[in-house]
Image (cartoon, rainbow, N blue to C red):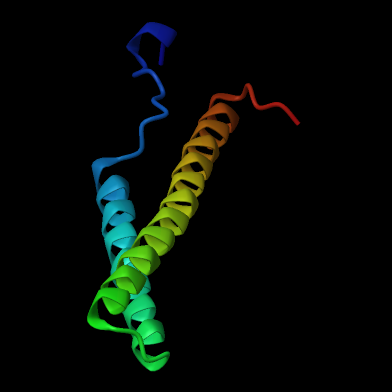
Length: 93
């Protein structure tokens, strides 16, 4: 196969991988919100305190999950690039 006929390797993750990452961020935010709400409820907070605890928990958990999701998507892209290089015979050790 000639160089011109190959499709260029893209660093952009597949749509399925991006959808899974997005769903995991939402799920992490939901879990963090529930944990924050439960923590504030157990500490005897008011309804406003419970809402603030849920909001802070959701934002922190979603942010942490987003960092992990980005790292995983980047690692997948690098893995795909390395395997494509090795299949082409230009892999570096």
